[in-house]
Length: 489
Image (cartoon, rainbow, N blue to C red):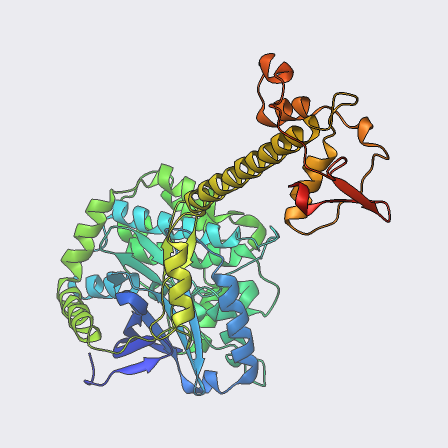
Protein backbone atom coordinates (compact mmCIF):
# COMPACT_ATOMS: atom_id res chain seq x y z
CA UNK A 1 0.00 0.00 0.00
CA UNK A 2 1.58 3.22 -1.14
CA UNK A 3 1.23 6.08 1.26
CA UNK A 4 -0.74 6.35 4.49
CA UNK A 5 -3.44 8.61 3.06
CA UNK A 6 -7.05 7.57 2.73
CA UNK A 7 -9.30 9.24 0.19
CA UNK A 8 -13.07 9.13 0.45
CA UNK A 9 -14.73 8.70 -2.95
CA UNK A 10 -18.48 8.99 -2.58
CA UNK A 11 -19.39 6.33 -0.07
CA UNK A 12 -16.07 4.48 -0.44
CA UNK A 13 -12.75 4.86 1.32
CA UNK A 14 -9.95 4.38 -1.22
CA UNK A 15 -6.62 3.11 0.06
CA UNK A 16 -3.26 2.40 -1.55
CA UNK A 17 -2.57 1.20 -5.08
CA UNK A 18 -2.25 -2.53 -5.67
CA UNK A 19 -1.94 -2.65 -9.48
CA UNK A 20 -1.49 -0.38 -12.48
CA UNK A 21 -2.16 -0.67 -16.18
CA UNK A 22 -2.45 1.32 -19.36
CA UNK A 23 -5.92 2.61 -18.54
CA UNK A 24 -6.13 2.72 -14.76
CA UNK A 25 -4.68 2.03 -11.36
CA UNK A 26 -6.41 -0.39 -8.99
CA UNK A 27 -6.81 0.38 -5.30
CA UNK A 28 -8.17 -1.48 -2.35
CA UNK A 29 -11.27 0.20 -0.99
CA UNK A 30 -13.91 -0.10 1.64
CA UNK A 31 -17.61 0.55 1.37
CA UNK A 32 -18.72 2.72 4.31
CA UNK A 33 -22.37 1.93 4.89
CA UNK A 34 -24.84 2.76 7.65
CA UNK A 35 -25.49 0.69 10.79
CA UNK A 36 -21.96 -0.69 10.75
CA UNK A 37 -22.16 -2.33 7.33
CA UNK A 38 -18.88 -2.37 5.41
CA UNK A 39 -17.31 -4.32 2.60
CA UNK A 40 -13.91 -4.58 0.98
CA UNK A 41 -13.95 -3.67 -2.71
CA UNK A 42 -11.53 -3.03 -5.57
CA UNK A 43 -11.63 0.50 -7.02
CA UNK A 44 -10.28 1.04 -10.51
CA UNK A 45 -9.27 4.67 -10.95
CA UNK A 46 -9.07 5.62 -14.62
CA UNK A 47 -6.17 7.76 -15.79
CA UNK A 48 -6.95 11.49 -16.06
CA UNK A 49 -6.76 11.62 -19.85
CA UNK A 50 -9.78 9.33 -20.06
CA UNK A 51 -11.81 11.21 -17.48
CA UNK A 52 -11.23 14.51 -19.33
CA UNK A 53 -12.69 13.21 -22.60
CA UNK A 54 -16.48 13.88 -22.46
CA UNK A 55 -17.25 11.34 -25.21
CA UNK A 56 -15.29 8.65 -23.39
CA UNK A 57 -16.98 9.48 -20.07
CA UNK A 58 -20.44 9.22 -21.62
CA UNK A 59 -19.69 5.93 -23.36
CA UNK A 60 -17.93 4.54 -20.30
CA UNK A 61 -20.91 5.22 -18.04
CA UNK A 62 -23.33 3.70 -20.55
CA UNK A 63 -21.22 0.57 -20.97
CA UNK A 64 -20.71 0.20 -17.23
CA UNK A 65 -24.47 0.25 -16.69
CA UNK A 66 -24.88 -2.42 -19.35
CA UNK A 67 -22.09 -4.54 -17.84
CA UNK A 68 -23.93 -4.52 -14.52
CA UNK A 69 -26.51 -6.79 -16.17
CA UNK A 70 -24.02 -9.68 -16.21
CA UNK A 71 -24.63 -12.00 -13.27
CA UNK A 72 -22.37 -15.06 -13.38
CA UNK A 73 -19.84 -16.67 -11.01
CA UNK A 74 -17.13 -16.43 -13.70
CA UNK A 75 -17.46 -12.67 -14.09
CA UNK A 76 -16.26 -10.13 -11.52
CA UNK A 77 -19.36 -7.99 -10.95
CA UNK A 78 -19.40 -4.23 -11.38
CA UNK A 79 -20.84 -2.80 -8.17
CA UNK A 80 -20.79 0.93 -8.81
CA UNK A 81 -19.47 3.74 -11.00
CA UNK A 82 -18.44 7.04 -9.43
CA UNK A 83 -17.84 10.24 -11.38
CA UNK A 84 -16.36 12.76 -8.96
CA UNK A 85 -14.16 15.85 -9.23
CA UNK A 86 -13.26 15.20 -12.84
CA UNK A 87 -12.32 11.57 -12.22
CA UNK A 88 -13.91 8.20 -12.93
CA UNK A 89 -13.90 5.27 -10.53
CA UNK A 90 -15.12 1.77 -11.28
CA UNK A 91 -16.03 -0.19 -8.13
CA UNK A 92 -15.79 -3.96 -8.38
CA UNK A 93 -16.09 -6.89 -6.05
CA UNK A 94 -12.77 -7.70 -4.41
CA UNK A 95 -11.62 -11.27 -5.07
CA UNK A 96 -8.56 -12.64 -3.30
CA UNK A 97 -6.40 -14.13 -6.03
CA UNK A 98 -3.96 -13.30 -8.83
CA UNK A 99 -4.28 -12.39 -12.47
CA UNK A 100 -3.48 -15.04 -15.04
CA UNK A 101 -0.98 -12.63 -16.59
CA UNK A 102 1.10 -12.49 -13.39
CA UNK A 103 0.86 -16.25 -12.92
CA UNK A 104 2.13 -16.89 -16.45
CA UNK A 105 4.91 -14.34 -16.03
CA UNK A 106 6.05 -15.93 -12.75
CA UNK A 107 6.13 -19.39 -14.31
CA UNK A 108 7.91 -18.09 -17.41
CA UNK A 109 10.73 -16.81 -15.20
CA UNK A 110 10.95 -20.10 -13.28
CA UNK A 111 10.69 -22.49 -16.22
CA UNK A 112 7.76 -24.89 -15.57
CA UNK A 113 4.46 -24.46 -17.39
CA UNK A 114 0.93 -24.55 -16.05
CA UNK A 115 -0.35 -28.13 -15.78
CA UNK A 116 -2.71 -28.78 -18.74
CA UNK A 117 -5.73 -29.67 -16.61
CA UNK A 118 -5.25 -26.49 -14.56
CA UNK A 119 -5.28 -24.60 -17.88
CA UNK A 120 -8.45 -26.45 -18.81
CA UNK A 121 -10.18 -25.38 -15.59
CA UNK A 122 -9.14 -21.73 -15.90
CA UNK A 123 -10.03 -21.37 -19.57
CA UNK A 124 -13.39 -23.15 -19.37
CA UNK A 125 -14.30 -20.74 -16.56
CA UNK A 126 -13.29 -17.85 -18.81
CA UNK A 127 -15.34 -19.16 -21.73
CA UNK A 128 -18.41 -19.72 -19.57
CA UNK A 129 -18.11 -16.18 -18.22
CA UNK A 130 -17.82 -14.79 -21.75
CA UNK A 131 -20.86 -16.76 -22.85
CA UNK A 132 -22.88 -15.33 -19.96
CA UNK A 133 -21.91 -11.82 -21.08
CA UNK A 134 -22.74 -12.54 -24.72
CA UNK A 135 -26.17 -13.85 -23.69
CA UNK A 136 -26.98 -10.98 -21.30
CA UNK A 137 -30.34 -9.30 -21.80
CA UNK A 138 -31.91 -6.02 -20.81
CA UNK A 139 -34.73 -5.55 -18.32
CA UNK A 140 -37.16 -6.03 -21.21
CA UNK A 141 -35.56 -9.31 -22.23
CA UNK A 142 -33.81 -7.92 -25.31
CA UNK A 143 -30.28 -9.16 -26.19
CA UNK A 144 -27.62 -6.58 -25.27
CA UNK A 145 -25.00 -7.81 -27.74
CA UNK A 146 -22.28 -7.22 -25.16
CA UNK A 147 -18.69 -7.97 -26.26
CA UNK A 148 -15.65 -7.74 -24.01
CA UNK A 149 -13.20 -6.61 -26.75
CA UNK A 150 -10.18 -6.93 -24.45
CA UNK A 151 -9.84 -10.55 -23.35
CA UNK A 152 -6.25 -11.00 -22.20
CA UNK A 153 -4.34 -12.67 -19.34
CA UNK A 154 -4.40 -9.39 -17.41
CA UNK A 155 -8.22 -9.43 -17.41
CA UNK A 156 -8.53 -12.97 -16.06
CA UNK A 157 -8.47 -13.25 -12.26
CA UNK A 158 -7.85 -16.68 -10.72
CA UNK A 159 -9.15 -16.69 -7.17
CA UNK A 160 -8.00 -18.52 -4.09
CA UNK A 161 -11.34 -20.32 -4.26
CA UNK A 162 -10.14 -22.06 -7.43
CA UNK A 163 -12.51 -20.13 -9.73
CA UNK A 164 -11.37 -17.98 -12.66
CA UNK A 165 -13.26 -14.78 -13.43
CA UNK A 166 -13.26 -12.28 -16.29
CA UNK A 167 -12.66 -8.60 -15.50
CA UNK A 168 -13.49 -5.26 -17.06
CA UNK A 169 -16.57 -5.70 -19.21
CA UNK A 170 -17.71 -2.50 -20.80
CA UNK A 171 -14.38 -0.66 -20.52
CA UNK A 172 -12.75 -1.66 -23.79
CA UNK A 173 -15.51 -0.33 -26.03
CA UNK A 174 -15.23 3.15 -24.55
CA UNK A 175 -11.45 2.95 -24.59
CA UNK A 176 -11.53 2.15 -28.29
CA UNK A 177 -12.41 5.74 -29.07
CA UNK A 178 -9.29 7.24 -27.49
CA UNK A 179 -7.13 4.37 -28.71
CA UNK A 180 -7.80 5.33 -32.32
CA UNK A 181 -5.73 8.27 -33.50
CA UNK A 182 -6.50 10.72 -36.28
CA UNK A 183 -4.70 8.70 -38.95
CA UNK A 184 -6.65 5.54 -38.11
CA UNK A 185 -3.84 3.76 -36.24
CA UNK A 186 -5.18 1.29 -33.70
CA UNK A 187 -3.51 1.15 -30.32
CA UNK A 188 -3.97 -1.44 -27.63
CA UNK A 189 -3.34 -5.16 -27.16
CA UNK A 190 -2.86 -6.12 -30.77
CA UNK A 191 -1.61 -9.55 -29.76
CA UNK A 192 -5.15 -10.57 -28.73
CA UNK A 193 -7.20 -8.79 -31.41
CA UNK A 194 -8.81 -10.80 -34.22
CA UNK A 195 -8.11 -9.67 -37.78
CA UNK A 196 -11.56 -8.13 -38.20
CA UNK A 197 -11.03 -5.93 -35.15
CA UNK A 198 -7.57 -4.85 -36.31
CA UNK A 199 -9.07 -3.91 -39.68
CA UNK A 200 -11.70 -1.78 -37.97
CA UNK A 201 -14.62 -3.89 -39.19
CA UNK A 202 -17.74 -5.04 -37.40
CA UNK A 203 -17.15 -7.55 -34.63
CA UNK A 204 -19.37 -9.87 -32.65
CA UNK A 205 -18.96 -12.46 -29.89
CA UNK A 206 -16.54 -14.45 -32.03
CA UNK A 207 -13.94 -11.71 -31.47
CA UNK A 208 -13.88 -12.66 -27.79
CA UNK A 209 -13.58 -16.34 -28.74
CA UNK A 210 -10.49 -15.55 -30.81
CA UNK A 211 -8.87 -13.58 -27.97
CA UNK A 212 -9.63 -16.35 -25.47
CA UNK A 213 -8.01 -18.86 -27.84
CA UNK A 214 -4.84 -16.76 -27.89
CA UNK A 215 -4.81 -16.82 -24.07
CA UNK A 216 -5.38 -20.59 -24.14
CA UNK A 217 -2.46 -21.12 -26.55
CA UNK A 218 -0.14 -19.03 -24.36
CA UNK A 219 -1.23 -20.77 -21.12
CA UNK A 220 -0.51 -24.20 -22.64
CA UNK A 221 2.86 -23.30 -24.15
CA UNK A 222 4.16 -20.74 -21.67
CA UNK A 223 5.07 -18.40 -24.55
CA UNK A 224 3.61 -15.35 -26.30
CA UNK A 225 1.84 -16.18 -29.54
CA UNK A 226 2.17 -12.85 -31.37
CA UNK A 227 5.14 -10.86 -30.09
CA UNK A 228 7.61 -8.44 -31.58
CA UNK A 229 9.73 -5.35 -30.98
CA UNK A 230 6.95 -2.98 -32.05
CA UNK A 231 3.30 -2.79 -33.04
CA UNK A 232 4.10 -3.18 -36.75
CA UNK A 233 5.85 -6.50 -36.17
CA UNK A 234 3.02 -7.72 -33.95
CA UNK A 235 0.47 -6.66 -36.54
CA UNK A 236 2.30 -8.47 -39.34
CA UNK A 237 2.49 -11.72 -37.40
CA UNK A 238 -1.10 -11.57 -36.22
CA UNK A 239 -2.39 -11.13 -39.78
CA UNK A 240 -0.11 -13.41 -41.78
CA UNK A 241 2.00 -15.75 -39.66
CA UNK A 242 0.67 -19.32 -39.38
CA UNK A 243 -0.13 -20.49 -35.85
CA UNK A 244 1.74 -23.64 -34.75
CA UNK A 245 -0.25 -26.23 -32.80
CA UNK A 246 0.40 -25.88 -29.04
CA UNK A 247 1.60 -29.49 -28.78
CA UNK A 248 4.71 -28.57 -30.82
CA UNK A 249 5.93 -26.40 -27.94
CA UNK A 250 4.15 -27.85 -24.91
CA UNK A 251 4.88 -31.49 -25.55
CA UNK A 252 2.26 -34.19 -25.53
CA UNK A 253 -1.29 -33.02 -25.01
CA UNK A 254 -4.49 -35.08 -25.01
CA UNK A 255 -5.80 -35.93 -28.45
CA UNK A 256 -7.96 -33.26 -30.01
CA UNK A 257 -6.66 -30.32 -27.97
CA UNK A 258 -4.75 -28.86 -30.93
CA UNK A 259 -7.90 -28.91 -33.04
CA UNK A 260 -9.87 -27.04 -30.36
CA UNK A 261 -7.22 -24.33 -30.03
CA UNK A 262 -6.68 -23.86 -33.76
CA UNK A 263 -10.43 -23.72 -34.40
CA UNK A 264 -10.73 -20.84 -31.97
CA UNK A 265 -7.76 -19.10 -33.68
CA UNK A 266 -9.19 -19.25 -37.20
CA UNK A 267 -8.66 -15.88 -38.91
CA UNK A 268 -12.10 -16.03 -40.47
CA UNK A 269 -14.85 -15.60 -37.91
CA UNK A 270 -17.19 -18.08 -39.60
CA UNK A 271 -14.58 -20.85 -39.16
CA UNK A 272 -14.34 -20.45 -35.37
CA UNK A 273 -16.59 -21.77 -32.65
CA UNK A 274 -19.80 -19.79 -32.92
CA UNK A 275 -20.31 -19.53 -29.17
CA UNK A 276 -17.98 -19.54 -26.20
CA UNK A 277 -20.14 -22.22 -24.63
CA UNK A 278 -19.45 -24.62 -27.52
CA UNK A 279 -15.71 -24.08 -27.16
CA UNK A 280 -15.86 -24.58 -23.36
CA UNK A 281 -17.63 -27.92 -23.78
CA UNK A 282 -15.11 -29.07 -26.41
CA UNK A 283 -12.20 -28.06 -24.19
CA UNK A 284 -13.62 -29.92 -21.19
CA UNK A 285 -14.02 -33.07 -23.25
CA UNK A 286 -10.61 -32.96 -24.94
CA UNK A 287 -8.30 -31.41 -22.35
CA UNK A 288 -10.11 -32.13 -19.09
CA UNK A 289 -10.40 -29.95 -16.02
CA UNK A 290 -9.04 -29.96 -12.50
CA UNK A 291 -10.95 -29.49 -9.26
CA UNK A 292 -11.21 -25.99 -7.73
CA UNK A 293 -9.17 -27.23 -4.78
CA UNK A 294 -6.26 -28.09 -7.07
CA UNK A 295 -6.54 -24.77 -8.89
CA UNK A 296 -6.50 -22.88 -5.57
CA UNK A 297 -3.42 -24.80 -4.42
CA UNK A 298 -1.66 -23.95 -7.69
CA UNK A 299 -2.41 -20.22 -7.32
CA UNK A 300 -1.25 -20.16 -3.71
CA UNK A 301 1.98 -21.96 -4.60
CA UNK A 302 2.88 -19.70 -7.52
CA UNK A 303 1.81 -16.37 -5.98
CA UNK A 304 2.31 -17.00 -2.28
CA UNK A 305 4.35 -13.86 -1.59
CA UNK A 306 2.12 -11.25 -3.29
CA UNK A 307 -0.99 -12.91 -1.91
CA UNK A 308 0.41 -12.72 1.63
CA UNK A 309 1.25 -9.05 1.23
CA UNK A 310 -2.22 -8.31 -0.12
CA UNK A 311 -3.89 -10.21 2.74
CA UNK A 312 -2.01 -8.02 5.22
CA UNK A 313 -3.13 -4.93 3.32
CA UNK A 314 -6.75 -6.04 3.45
CA UNK A 315 -6.46 -6.71 7.17
CA UNK A 316 -4.96 -3.26 7.68
CA UNK A 317 -7.63 -1.36 5.77
CA UNK A 318 -10.41 -3.27 7.51
CA UNK A 319 -9.01 -2.25 10.88
CA UNK A 320 -8.48 1.34 9.76
CA UNK A 321 -11.88 1.72 8.12
CA UNK A 322 -13.64 0.99 11.42
CA UNK A 323 -12.49 4.43 12.63
CA UNK A 324 -13.67 6.27 9.50
CA UNK A 325 -16.95 8.21 9.53
CA UNK A 326 -19.93 6.43 8.04
CA UNK A 327 -21.11 7.88 4.74
CA UNK A 328 -24.90 7.84 4.65
CA UNK A 329 -26.70 7.40 1.37
CA UNK A 330 -28.99 10.33 2.20
CA UNK A 331 -28.93 13.46 4.34
CA UNK A 332 -32.29 12.52 5.80
CA UNK A 333 -32.27 10.64 9.13
CA UNK A 334 -32.86 6.95 8.94
CA UNK A 335 -36.25 5.89 10.25
CA UNK A 336 -36.42 2.61 12.12
CA UNK A 337 -39.63 0.62 11.90
CA UNK A 338 -41.06 -1.55 14.66
CA UNK A 339 -43.00 -4.47 13.25
CA UNK A 340 -46.24 -5.78 14.67
CA UNK A 341 -48.48 -8.57 13.33
CA UNK A 342 -50.96 -5.91 12.17
CA UNK A 343 -48.93 -2.69 12.24
CA UNK A 344 -45.80 -1.05 10.88
CA UNK A 345 -45.25 1.82 13.32
CA UNK A 346 -42.48 4.44 12.99
CA UNK A 347 -40.17 4.49 15.96
CA UNK A 348 -40.29 7.63 18.09
CA UNK A 349 -37.96 10.36 16.91
CA UNK A 350 -36.20 12.25 19.72
CA UNK A 351 -37.73 15.67 20.16
CA UNK A 352 -40.79 14.90 18.07
CA UNK A 353 -43.69 14.54 20.45
CA UNK A 354 -46.20 13.94 17.66
CA UNK A 355 -44.35 10.91 16.34
CA UNK A 356 -43.77 9.63 19.87
CA UNK A 357 -47.42 9.82 20.77
CA UNK A 358 -48.41 8.09 17.52
CA UNK A 359 -45.97 5.30 18.22
CA UNK A 360 -47.22 4.79 21.78
CA UNK A 361 -50.83 4.73 20.67
CA UNK A 362 -50.16 2.39 17.79
CA UNK A 363 -48.36 -0.17 19.90
CA UNK A 364 -51.76 -1.46 21.11
CA UNK A 365 -53.81 -3.43 18.59
CA UNK A 366 -57.01 -1.57 17.68
CA UNK A 367 -59.41 -4.53 18.02
CA UNK A 368 -59.33 -5.11 21.81
CA UNK A 369 -59.25 -1.36 22.39
CA UNK A 370 -62.61 -0.88 20.61
CA UNK A 371 -64.18 -3.78 22.51
CA UNK A 372 -63.16 -2.28 25.89
CA UNK A 373 -65.03 0.95 25.02
CA UNK A 374 -68.05 -0.78 23.52
CA UNK A 375 -68.90 -2.78 26.66
CA UNK A 376 -69.42 0.24 29.02
CA UNK A 377 -71.43 2.04 26.33
CA UNK A 378 -73.71 -0.98 25.86
CA UNK A 379 -74.25 -1.20 29.65
CA UNK A 380 -75.09 2.50 29.83
CA UNK A 381 -77.58 2.26 26.98
CA UNK A 382 -79.23 -0.78 28.54
CA UNK A 383 -79.48 1.01 31.89
CA UNK A 384 -81.11 4.07 30.31
CA UNK A 385 -83.52 1.84 28.44
CA UNK A 386 -84.55 0.02 31.63
CA UNK A 387 -84.94 3.31 33.45
CA UNK A 388 -87.15 4.73 30.71
CA UNK A 389 -89.26 1.57 30.71
CA UNK A 390 -89.72 1.74 34.48
CA UNK A 391 -90.74 5.38 34.27
CA UNK A 392 -93.28 4.61 31.58
CA UNK A 393 -94.64 1.75 33.69
CA UNK A 394 -95.13 4.01 36.72
CA UNK A 395 -96.88 6.67 34.67
CA UNK A 396 -99.17 4.15 33.01
CA UNK A 397 -100.12 2.66 36.39
CA UNK A 398 -100.80 6.16 37.74
CA UNK A 399 -102.93 6.99 34.72
CA UNK A 400 -104.82 3.71 35.08
CA UNK A 401 -105.67 4.42 38.69
CA UNK A 402 -106.93 7.89 37.83
CA UNK A 403 -109.00 6.62 34.95
CA UNK A 404 -110.63 3.88 37.00
CA UNK A 405 -112.25 6.45 39.32
CA UNK A 406 -114.10 8.05 36.43
CA UNK A 407 -116.59 5.16 36.30
CA UNK A 408 -117.07 2.05 34.30
CA UNK A 409 -119.03 3.65 31.45
CA UNK A 410 -115.89 3.75 29.26
CA UNK A 411 -112.41 2.17 29.35
CA UNK A 412 -109.43 4.04 30.65
CA UNK A 413 -107.23 5.71 28.02
CA UNK A 414 -103.48 5.35 27.65
CA UNK A 415 -103.20 8.88 26.36
CA UNK A 416 -103.02 10.44 29.85
CA UNK A 417 -100.06 8.21 30.70
CA UNK A 418 -98.17 9.32 27.63
CA UNK A 419 -99.22 12.90 28.31
CA UNK A 420 -97.94 12.63 31.88
CA UNK A 421 -94.49 11.61 30.67
CA UNK A 422 -94.43 14.56 28.31
CA UNK A 423 -95.80 16.90 30.90
CA UNK A 424 -93.02 16.02 33.29
CA UNK A 425 -90.63 17.46 30.70
CA UNK A 426 -92.95 20.36 29.91
CA UNK A 427 -93.27 19.25 26.31
CA UNK A 428 -96.74 19.39 24.68
CA UNK A 429 -97.90 16.16 23.06
CA UNK A 430 -100.04 16.25 19.91
CA UNK A 431 -102.76 13.66 20.19
CA UNK A 432 -103.16 11.43 17.19
CA UNK A 433 -106.47 10.07 18.56
CA UNK A 434 -109.47 12.44 18.55
CA UNK A 435 -111.32 10.68 21.39
CA UNK A 436 -109.88 9.05 24.55
CA UNK A 437 -112.08 6.01 24.01
CA UNK A 438 -109.97 5.01 20.96
CA UNK A 439 -106.92 4.29 23.14
CA UNK A 440 -106.18 0.75 24.39
CA UNK A 441 -106.81 -0.22 27.97
CA UNK A 442 -104.27 0.73 30.62
CA UNK A 443 -103.85 -2.88 31.71
CA UNK A 444 -102.78 -3.95 28.22
CA UNK A 445 -100.25 -1.12 28.02
CA UNK A 446 -98.81 -2.16 31.37
CA UNK A 447 -98.43 -5.75 30.20
CA UNK A 448 -96.66 -4.68 27.00
CA UNK A 449 -94.27 -2.35 28.85
CA UNK A 450 -93.27 -4.91 31.44
CA UNK A 451 -92.82 -7.72 28.88
CA UNK A 452 -94.82 -10.09 31.10
CA UNK A 453 -96.63 -13.02 29.50
CA UNK A 454 -98.88 -13.69 32.53
CA UNK A 455 -102.66 -13.57 31.94
CA UNK A 456 -103.16 -12.12 35.41
CA UNK A 457 -101.27 -8.98 34.39
CA UNK A 458 -103.87 -8.36 31.69
CA UNK A 459 -107.04 -8.91 33.82
CA UNK A 460 -106.17 -7.63 37.30
CA UNK A 461 -108.46 -4.70 38.24
CA UNK A 462 -106.99 -1.37 39.23
CA UNK A 463 -107.37 -0.36 42.86
CA UNK A 464 -110.23 2.15 43.52
CA UNK A 465 -109.87 5.52 45.22
CA UNK A 466 -112.09 8.63 45.52
CA UNK A 467 -112.28 10.81 42.43
CA UNK A 468 -111.04 14.37 42.86
CA UNK A 469 -113.39 17.17 42.07
CA UNK A 470 -113.05 18.55 38.55
CA UNK A 471 -110.87 15.66 37.37
CA UNK A 472 -113.33 13.99 35.05
CA UNK A 473 -111.73 14.21 32.57
CA UNK A 474 -108.29 14.99 34.14
CA UNK A 475 -107.11 17.09 31.18
CA UNK A 476 -108.17 20.02 29.04
CA UNK A 477 -107.86 20.42 25.24
CA UNK A 478 -106.17 23.64 24.08
CA UNK A 479 -105.87 24.14 20.32
CA UNK A 480 -106.27 20.43 19.84
CA UNK A 481 -103.56 19.61 22.41
CA UNK A 482 -104.35 17.73 25.60
CA UNK A 483 -102.82 19.12 28.79
CA UNK A 484 -103.04 17.33 32.12
CA UNK A 485 -104.62 19.27 34.98
CA UNK A 486 -102.01 19.74 37.73
CA UNK A 487 -104.57 19.29 40.50
CA UNK A 488 -105.45 15.86 39.17
CA UNK A 489 -101.96 14.43 39.64
